[in-house]
Image (cartoon, rainbow, N blue to C red; front, top):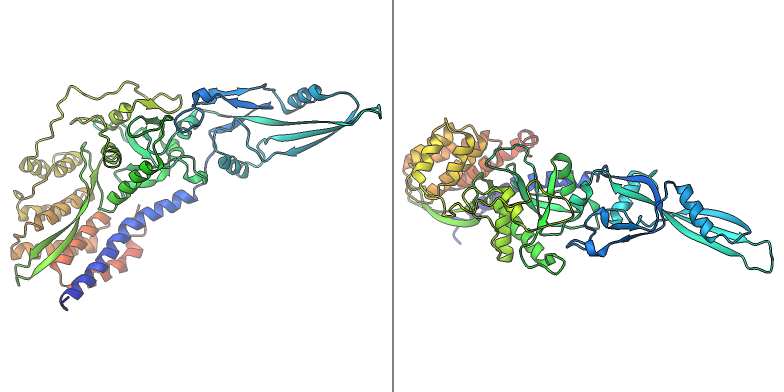
Length: 497
């Protein structure tokens, strides 16, 4: 290795550290909030009734070997109060004489408790005054001393039910299942939202039914929310399954579910970007040799080809990559709701808003025309909506027809961070063509420094760091990194999602 290569590699290592700071910080901050959040049991409450035993109807189990609904619980008898239940059971065993009563709390969960044993423990800690199973013991002495004493022992359990039926929605799910919910905003071209469950009923209740999903907010690929938490914000439509290698219970293997999670995590490392189009592009590393137009030295530009997903296309990718399973629909107008409805089986008894799949099967599945000139013209027309302009940038796969000057000018004047981030991605793609003039080189240098000084958007700053690694000297880049680090604690502390 030459001495000239050492500063370059050192500069690159520092740059990579900074890149990691932006992606990891947003994830860790949100995960720490989720882990610290207490599990809410507002949906579950005691009914006031008591019983001695309850049985699960095993003919109505779902794929995760859990009751499909509370209707599958059969009680031996239900009593309107603890005292009436106690009297009934005592009378059954009473043979005369004098009996002494003792009552103790039982540590076991009620047999009809709709969640896991660990969640019962958490519920008791959160609501210590809630009714618990009671172990009742009677020691009875008969008046006739020739007859032996006898005992009466039984356990009474409080009945618990989900007050609004939502327990079944997020309780009945397996790793690899797909869920759907309402959007915060409701445009007709993006109907519904979907994602994948990657944990089932874990030992830690706070990790039960965590989901992996794509949102339009950094870090784009999210893994820190549970179905229960999301159900409080917006209603969950339900949980569905039916594709991939499933066992007789409809379960995906642990290894297949882990493979999905791993592939999703890998894509999260490639500067993921959100698209409103029903497409996806996989992230990857690439290295291009770029010639400095001033001194004609060749420099290596190591970049990420950013991953691009929408919520439903992310699910399609995971099933395709992990299970070699192509999910329907594959249409130019598909919506997240369509993907969810295409799964044939519903966990539990809840019914989604539309039971019938809306697949738009009569439409052609021919890929969209890849006309970069038309797409660029749509973007440049600022009378178009941000959605339309962003979608047009997603459609550009060949930057050769876009002039450097027009691209640089658009970056300099664009005020929407999402669009500016996409433009920086195009600029990196354009730089790889290795046809820059001296003016282009200087303009890239100016735009990169301005972004490092002024931008609060992690995606813009990361792309600016990549370009600065190309057009600045190692000493200049290190100086910009020092400046960036100096402003991060103050200016970025309330900007990271």
